[in-house]
Image 1 (cartoon, helix red, strand yellow):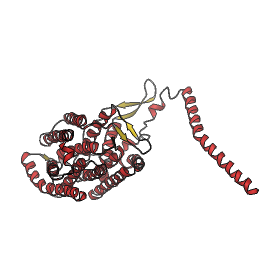
Image 2 (cartoon, one colour):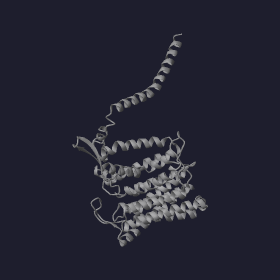
Image 3 (cartoon, helix red, strand yellow):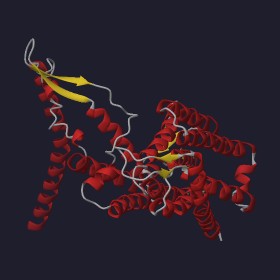
Image 4 (tube, helix red, strand yellow):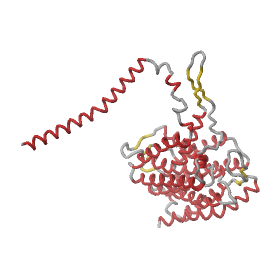
Length: 429
């Protein structure tokens, strides 16, 4: 019965978004909320924005209906603390969505949007509660956060808000990837017993799936900042509140479920920062290499996001979407499994991170090829690095570390040898 109830949440949100999106498209055309073609854009015809209004309206209506019809989640929002927590979360999301809607219609500065996102995230963390501890692995137990908890909570929500926004560069990417992530997080929240968060995330996932056909076919409509910033904010806040068990936040499953937008976000920040770092060869007063730093332009849009690069590598749009959807679904499934088997999460996270570190410099971004760009040259010319005493100290440290590694191996070999000799003697007798 429980599974049917939550399946109905997903299905109702899907149908509502499917029906509301054409209406919102006509409203966007009347209001002039239209995305014009440009140098950094791949569409050649004007396309209405504000598609996120249909998605979030459908999700909100379904969540409101669930609060009335589903007795399992009603007590969680009927109490004073629960009502306050989810009311503030809803109000903060409304502020972010309203701000994003104004940006879709009139345009707002990136810094103003960032300040609003920070304020909304801080309100959620202040009222809903910051994570007091993190459950990283089954071997370390809970890692207490202390004063770091509120800062981590705000950064998580703001990072997810902008991460989803950064994926909204090719038709179907932001809506599809976010739908998969929301569904995976909903399943994790159900496993952790947080039914309200699961309802919110399932409604968001279903609404995004209902919007997807309108985003992929003609005439089309974009999510706009209304949808990408709004969905990102809800994903960040709901995953922070919903993925808590025994007083600790399930950080690793959350990271795995949201790895695709977080990976896009991290690579974008890193490549834009590294692009502004240039190694130059100076000849006066003496020949040397030095690092010149420019403005990274973190808020300046470009056409080098991961979906763009996949298209440039020769993949068609459908193939690129398949790659991103498959990555999101696989990591989301592993994240869900990690709720049951915690040892799986860190292992999968390290494998995924190693894959990104290996493939991103080779196939995606030349900015990440640090050795080819001469990033070590200014370091090697530093007078401390070239100091003979530093070299001696460095060699001593390496010898000491090698000794620490080899000693248990030698002891283990001695034990094996002694055991073998004993067996040999006994065999001779």
